[in-house]
Amino acid sequence: MSVILTEDEKMIVELAADFAKQAIAPTADEMEAAGKIPKAVIAQMAELGFMGINIPEAYGGIGMGEEVKALVIEEIAKADASVAELLSVHTLSSDIINRHGTEEQKEKYLARACSGQVGAFALTEPGAGSDAAAAKTKAVPDGDDYVINGTKCFISNMGKDEGDYVILIALTDPEKKTRGMSAIIVDRGTPGFSVGKAEDKMGLRAAPVSELIFEDCRVPKTQLLGEAGKGFGLAMAGLDGGRIGMAAQAVGLAEGALTAAVQYAGERVQFGKPISANQGIQWYLADMATRTEAAKLLTLNAAKLREAGLPVSKEAAMAKYYASEAAVYVADKALQIHGGYGYMKDYAIERVYRDARIIPLYEGTSEVQKMVISRAVIAGR
Ligand code: COS
Image (cartoon, rainbow, N blue to C red; front, side, top):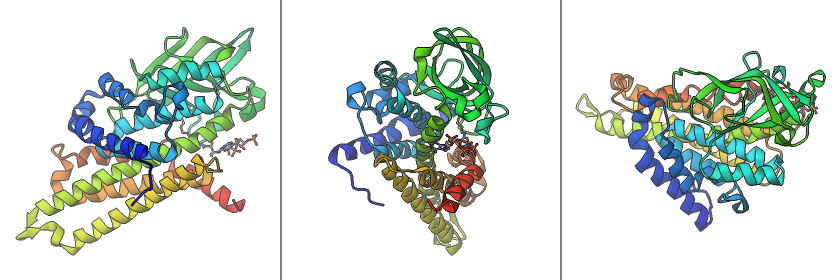
């Protein structure tokens, strides 16, 4: 698929493709085995501008639009979905700060984001997954501070020594439910804030995901992001952008799986010919390529609309829903084409298959995306 980009934009996407091939792909298995993305990889992404891809130059970023951000995440996901996940969640957090932060907050946190400090976003709780409005974590106003108590779970980009600051969604006025939720930036190291259980995951094993615990954690009111009581809408609008990032991750993963399947099918000889000469395999490849392309079109369509400042909830949900299901399908068929070898750790597809499975589950399950899409369709949007 051809995308029309300026010379600068093209250069960034090519830089991401080279970085993915040279620095990420050769170490993906090592990162998975270690359960860690080395700090050096994050530092390199900062140096290349990717950690500040969506941040205006005035705050130290490279000020690229939504489409380029999606294309960069896609290129990285071709090589390793864990690194793409880190970048996607990091850009979700800096996007929210860029849209809602005060000048002081932007100067402080966006500069940190660009320099390679990692941002996170904490909405999910043990009793509030798909039903995000059921979140119970409280941030009670007390003088010039909020006092935070509660537990968040499955928080990407946070680990024992990963993640530098988090955008927390908490109830500042519990009576008002979602209209009493606010977004607050909390720094790692704030007394009363600790990182709990690190999740032992099926896939995306290099990407940190942990529980966050707040016990009488005192944060100055200057850490409030946007208006008090507007945190739920801010989170939902932020997730519209985050879902485009996850769709881009899914597209890249699918492209990587397709490339591996094509290569294997051309090399593997059975019954005296490469298996790619069989129509059964060819039809798999055709389906895989078509779904990947459709996923990319939906993703870039949503990215373009968001860039233009247009409503994008439905389109972002469509992109996330379709691309994540496509990634699971393509990874599954790519493994099937690899036959028994695909089940062995000697081939990257074994990892890619496990990595794919989370995408229809996080940043809103496929079922949540369908809720968002159907509500929009019924409302005639
Ligand atoms: N942009 C801005 N505001 C939005 C919005 C969006 N995309 N979606 C909803 N809102 C606002 C609504 O306008 C409404 O505001 P008011 O109370 O002022 O009228 C408020 O948020 C509540 O909206 P709604 O009634 O639609 O909320 P629901 O409880 O029905 O929840 C879903 C909607 C299911 C879509 C939401 O809970 C969700 O996305 N769940 C999945 C959460 C998720 O993706 N988690 C990922 C992990 S992040 S760590």
